[in-house]
Image 1 (spheres, one colour):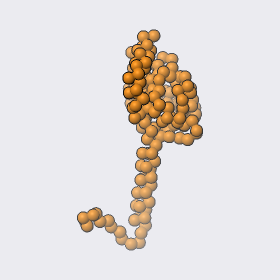
Image 2 (cartoon, one colour; image 1 turned 45 degrees about the vertical axis):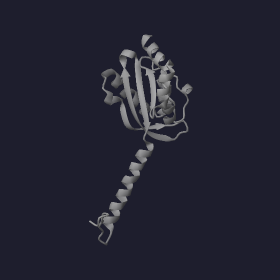
Image 3 (spheres, helix red, strand yellow; image 1 turned 90 degrees about the vertical axis):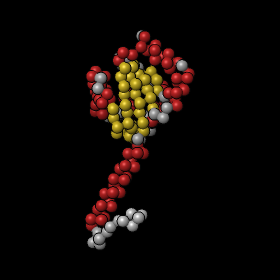
Length: 165
């Protein structure tokens, strides 16, 4: 198939592969029609929880590992299929997706998928945003406790900035 040959030519280029392996985000390239798992850089595999390239032969295997709950897995699959069918990239973007790692731990990731139907390719990027999201949640909880404390205090409180105002 011409489309797959083009992807193989790009991935066979050591210079191009070095660029892909040096990206700060995870990147994978799959075929749309058969769902073959064609390429994943090391960041993609690390972000998704320490998998190896041999663990995923196709998107079905990938989905079964990353989304062990059938309902979540089917929801993601349907959203991707709608995005491919309609070309609406919003259908293929998640900012706070929870995934399961190989060791059973969960991560929060931001995922973007871009279908290239003329080339029969699906490009996927992923970023681990777990620390950022946990920090945001911790800050919200701290602010909540602060507001509860100030509202419940029998003594008046006020804040001054460094300039005394």
